[in-house]
Length: 204
Image (cartoon, rainbow, N blue to C red; front, side, top):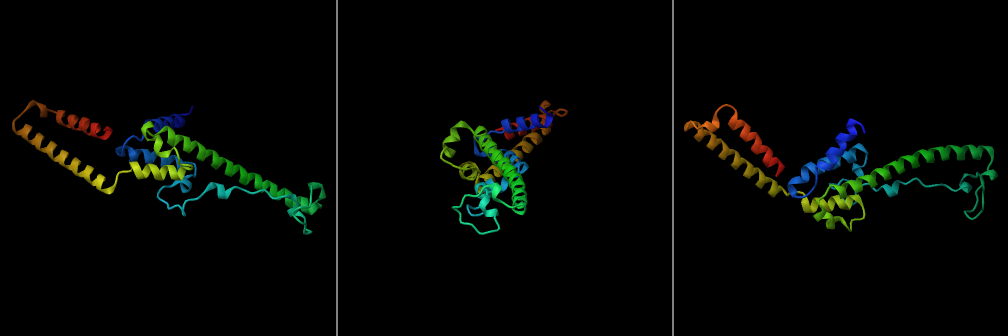
Protein backbone atom coordinates (compact mmCIF):
# COMPACT_ATOMS: atom_id res chain seq x y z
CA UNK A 1 0.00 0.00 0.00
CA UNK A 2 1.39 3.41 -1.00
CA UNK A 3 1.81 6.30 1.43
CA UNK A 4 -1.08 8.09 -0.29
CA UNK A 5 -3.37 5.07 0.13
CA UNK A 6 -2.34 4.74 3.78
CA UNK A 7 -3.07 8.42 4.35
CA UNK A 8 -6.47 8.04 2.71
CA UNK A 9 -7.24 5.00 4.87
CA UNK A 10 -6.33 6.79 8.08
CA UNK A 11 -8.35 9.86 7.10
CA UNK A 12 -11.42 7.86 6.15
CA UNK A 13 -11.45 5.74 9.29
CA UNK A 14 -10.56 8.47 11.80
CA UNK A 15 -13.47 10.85 11.08
CA UNK A 16 -16.66 9.28 12.42
CA UNK A 17 -19.97 11.15 12.32
CA UNK A 18 -21.39 10.74 15.79
CA UNK A 19 -22.69 14.19 16.75
CA UNK A 20 -23.27 17.60 15.12
CA UNK A 21 -19.80 18.75 16.18
CA UNK A 22 -18.34 16.08 13.86
CA UNK A 23 -20.25 17.23 10.78
CA UNK A 24 -17.79 19.71 9.28
CA UNK A 25 -14.76 17.38 9.37
CA UNK A 26 -16.79 14.34 8.31
CA UNK A 27 -18.47 16.22 5.47
CA UNK A 28 -15.14 17.68 4.28
CA UNK A 29 -13.60 14.20 3.93
CA UNK A 30 -16.69 12.79 2.19
CA UNK A 31 -16.79 15.71 -0.26
CA UNK A 32 -13.07 15.33 -0.93
CA UNK A 33 -13.57 11.66 -1.81
CA UNK A 34 -16.55 12.40 -4.06
CA UNK A 35 -14.73 15.21 -5.88
CA UNK A 36 -11.67 13.04 -6.46
CA UNK A 37 -13.83 10.42 -8.18
CA UNK A 38 -16.00 12.95 -10.03
CA UNK A 39 -19.06 11.95 -8.01
CA UNK A 40 -20.00 15.21 -6.28
CA UNK A 41 -22.68 16.31 -8.82
CA UNK A 42 -24.44 12.98 -8.16
CA UNK A 43 -24.51 13.23 -4.35
CA UNK A 44 -24.26 16.92 -3.38
CA UNK A 45 -26.90 17.43 -0.64
CA UNK A 46 -26.83 21.16 -1.33
CA UNK A 47 -28.65 20.61 -4.62
CA UNK A 48 -32.39 20.24 -5.00
CA UNK A 49 -33.92 16.95 -6.08
CA UNK A 50 -34.27 18.32 -9.62
CA UNK A 51 -30.68 19.61 -9.84
CA UNK A 52 -28.53 16.64 -8.84
CA UNK A 53 -27.42 14.25 -11.57
CA UNK A 54 -28.58 10.63 -11.66
CA UNK A 55 -26.06 8.17 -13.03
CA UNK A 56 -28.73 5.74 -14.19
CA UNK A 57 -29.97 8.33 -16.66
CA UNK A 58 -26.50 8.46 -18.25
CA UNK A 59 -26.09 4.73 -18.83
CA UNK A 60 -25.05 4.10 -22.46
CA UNK A 61 -27.73 2.30 -24.43
CA UNK A 62 -27.03 -0.48 -26.88
CA UNK A 63 -28.36 -0.21 -30.41
CA UNK A 64 -29.78 -3.26 -32.17
CA UNK A 65 -28.02 -4.28 -35.36
CA UNK A 66 -31.07 -3.60 -37.54
CA UNK A 67 -30.68 0.13 -36.84
CA UNK A 68 -27.42 0.15 -38.80
CA UNK A 69 -29.14 -0.92 -42.04
CA UNK A 70 -29.42 1.94 -44.50
CA UNK A 71 -32.65 0.43 -45.68
CA UNK A 72 -35.44 1.08 -43.24
CA UNK A 73 -36.49 -2.06 -41.44
CA UNK A 74 -39.11 -2.82 -38.86
CA UNK A 75 -37.96 -3.46 -35.31
CA UNK A 76 -39.28 -7.03 -35.49
CA UNK A 77 -37.04 -8.11 -38.36
CA UNK A 78 -34.10 -10.31 -37.42
CA UNK A 79 -30.80 -8.84 -38.63
CA UNK A 80 -27.34 -10.23 -37.91
CA UNK A 81 -23.96 -8.60 -38.46
CA UNK A 82 -23.59 -10.74 -41.60
CA UNK A 83 -26.60 -8.97 -43.12
CA UNK A 84 -24.84 -5.60 -43.08
CA UNK A 85 -22.95 -4.16 -46.02
CA UNK A 86 -19.24 -3.28 -45.69
CA UNK A 87 -20.16 0.37 -45.14
CA UNK A 88 -22.77 -0.55 -42.55
CA UNK A 89 -20.31 -2.85 -40.75
CA UNK A 90 -17.78 0.02 -40.63
CA UNK A 91 -20.37 2.35 -39.07
CA UNK A 92 -21.36 -0.36 -36.58
CA UNK A 93 -17.71 -0.98 -35.62
CA UNK A 94 -17.10 2.72 -34.94
CA UNK A 95 -20.24 2.89 -32.84
CA UNK A 96 -19.27 -0.29 -30.93
CA UNK A 97 -15.83 1.14 -30.00
CA UNK A 98 -17.40 4.37 -28.81
CA UNK A 99 -20.03 2.44 -26.85
CA UNK A 100 -17.36 0.32 -25.11
CA UNK A 101 -15.44 3.44 -24.01
CA UNK A 102 -18.58 5.14 -22.71
CA UNK A 103 -19.75 1.98 -20.96
CA UNK A 104 -16.34 1.56 -19.29
CA UNK A 105 -16.49 5.13 -17.96
CA UNK A 106 -20.05 4.61 -16.76
CA UNK A 107 -19.16 1.37 -14.97
CA UNK A 108 -16.23 3.12 -13.30
CA UNK A 109 -18.57 5.80 -11.99
CA UNK A 110 -21.04 3.15 -10.83
CA UNK A 111 -18.27 1.37 -8.93
CA UNK A 112 -17.11 4.63 -7.33
CA UNK A 113 -20.66 5.40 -6.19
CA UNK A 114 -21.03 1.94 -4.64
CA UNK A 115 -17.73 2.37 -2.78
CA UNK A 116 -18.78 5.84 -1.62
CA UNK A 117 -22.09 4.44 -0.40
CA UNK A 118 -20.25 1.85 1.67
CA UNK A 119 -17.85 4.53 2.96
CA UNK A 120 -20.74 6.57 4.33
CA UNK A 121 -22.15 3.56 6.16
CA UNK A 122 -18.70 2.79 7.63
CA UNK A 123 -18.02 6.32 8.85
CA UNK A 124 -21.18 7.16 10.77
CA UNK A 125 -21.89 6.07 14.31
CA UNK A 126 -23.90 2.86 14.47
CA UNK A 127 -26.63 4.67 16.41
CA UNK A 128 -27.36 6.77 13.29
CA UNK A 129 -27.65 3.89 10.82
CA UNK A 130 -31.41 3.83 11.28
CA UNK A 131 -31.51 7.30 9.70
CA UNK A 132 -30.33 5.98 6.32
CA UNK A 133 -31.57 2.39 6.35
CA UNK A 134 -34.46 3.29 4.03
CA UNK A 135 -32.47 5.66 1.80
CA UNK A 136 -32.21 4.10 -1.64
CA UNK A 137 -29.47 6.36 -3.06
CA UNK A 138 -26.46 8.39 -1.95
CA UNK A 139 -28.14 11.75 -2.43
CA UNK A 140 -30.95 10.84 -0.03
CA UNK A 141 -28.42 9.44 2.46
CA UNK A 142 -26.45 12.68 2.56
CA UNK A 143 -29.49 14.95 2.64
CA UNK A 144 -30.95 12.90 5.52
CA UNK A 145 -27.71 12.99 7.51
CA UNK A 146 -27.37 16.72 6.85
CA UNK A 147 -30.92 17.32 8.06
CA UNK A 148 -30.33 15.52 11.36
CA UNK A 149 -26.63 16.12 12.12
CA UNK A 150 -25.50 19.33 10.43
CA UNK A 151 -25.46 22.14 13.05
CA UNK A 152 -27.89 24.96 12.35
CA UNK A 153 -26.74 28.58 12.08
CA UNK A 154 -28.05 29.30 15.58
CA UNK A 155 -26.17 26.30 16.98
CA UNK A 156 -22.95 27.46 15.33
CA UNK A 157 -23.39 30.99 16.70
CA UNK A 158 -24.02 29.55 20.16
CA UNK A 159 -20.81 27.51 19.96
CA UNK A 160 -18.83 30.57 18.90
CA UNK A 161 -20.27 32.66 21.74
CA UNK A 162 -19.31 29.95 24.24
CA UNK A 163 -15.80 29.85 22.81
CA UNK A 164 -15.44 33.64 23.05
CA UNK A 165 -16.59 33.55 26.67
CA UNK A 166 -14.15 30.74 27.46
CA UNK A 167 -11.27 32.64 25.85
CA UNK A 168 -12.10 35.86 27.76
CA UNK A 169 -12.18 33.88 31.00
CA UNK A 170 -8.79 32.33 30.20
CA UNK A 171 -7.20 35.75 29.55
CA UNK A 172 -8.62 37.07 32.84
CA UNK A 173 -7.25 34.09 34.80
CA UNK A 174 -3.77 34.53 33.29
CA UNK A 175 -3.81 38.23 34.15
CA UNK A 176 -4.78 37.51 37.76
CA UNK A 177 -2.13 34.80 38.09
CA UNK A 178 0.48 37.20 36.70
CA UNK A 179 -0.49 39.92 39.16
CA UNK A 180 -0.31 37.40 42.01
CA UNK A 181 3.07 36.13 40.72
CA UNK A 182 1.86 32.55 40.80
CA UNK A 183 4.30 29.86 39.55
CA UNK A 184 1.67 28.55 37.06
CA UNK A 185 2.60 31.35 34.63
CA UNK A 186 6.37 30.81 34.73
CA UNK A 187 8.03 30.29 31.33
CA UNK A 188 5.81 28.79 28.65
CA UNK A 189 3.65 26.85 31.07
CA UNK A 190 0.50 28.92 30.56
CA UNK A 191 0.86 28.80 26.76
CA UNK A 192 1.33 25.03 26.88
CA UNK A 193 -1.76 24.65 29.10
CA UNK A 194 -3.71 26.81 26.66
CA UNK A 195 -2.71 24.65 23.68
CA UNK A 196 -3.63 21.47 25.56
CA UNK A 197 -7.01 22.95 26.49
CA UNK A 198 -7.74 24.04 22.92
CA UNK A 199 -6.91 20.56 21.66
CA UNK A 200 -9.31 19.17 24.24
CA UNK A 201 -12.07 21.44 22.97
CA UNK A 202 -11.34 20.47 19.38
CA UNK A 203 -11.67 16.77 20.23
CA UNK A 204 -14.87 17.16 22.22
